[in-house]
Image (cartoon, rainbow, N blue to C red; front, side, top):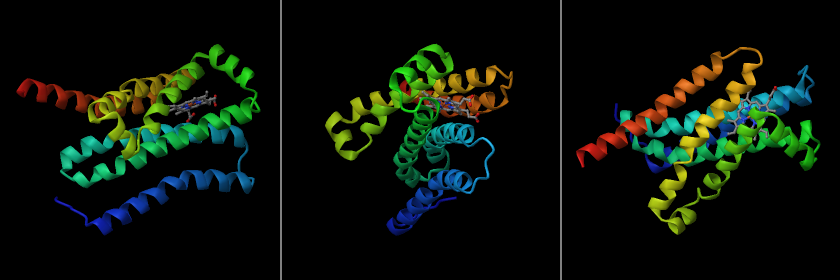
Length: 204
Ligand code: HEM
């Protein structure tokens, strides 16, 4: 079904997505300040981790959805979704740095090196920084489309690292259901891109 929103409708959709993306944060704040959480620190660390992963999936779903539905306007949501992924990753990292280590960077660093699942999460987070930093139009122009595209292929490294982080964390309890579900979703979303790129190359 063709759906081509006007500029005004697109702005409204973007505003709606922006507000919706803040709901998880508002919920975390509300549950914490009203004292409804038994383990608030654990809840916040886990929720921010979950939402980083969900926004990774939403961001990577834009291109396949756009291609399948022909709703080209969806691309206008991609940068915002990617930045919300980074936003929740920063909160996730800050909760770890604050609640687990009280901003003691030396202690945090030891922990990053000691626990492999944290090492992997940390690498994924560091790799996200150049993507967020180059998300503006000015940076895209400065880098040039081709170089920008190459840099943003880091997402093919970040996504498996995010799943490995989640997998390793759940390994202690032998509970792999969620890592398998999100790993499969990300594999399909990235696999579709690879398939289209190879088909384009073969045609050329
Ligand atoms: C792209 C980056 C990252 C993603 C996608 C991510 C995702 C996740 C997810 C999905 C969880 C599990 C939440 C649940 O149990 O439902 C989690 C837990 C956790 N992550 Fe991350 N994470 C990332 C980066 C980091 C970084 C940079 C650190 C710290 C340096 C970190 C530390 C932790 C810790 C401490 C937990 C909780 C472990 C526990 O409660 O036992 N993560 N993360």
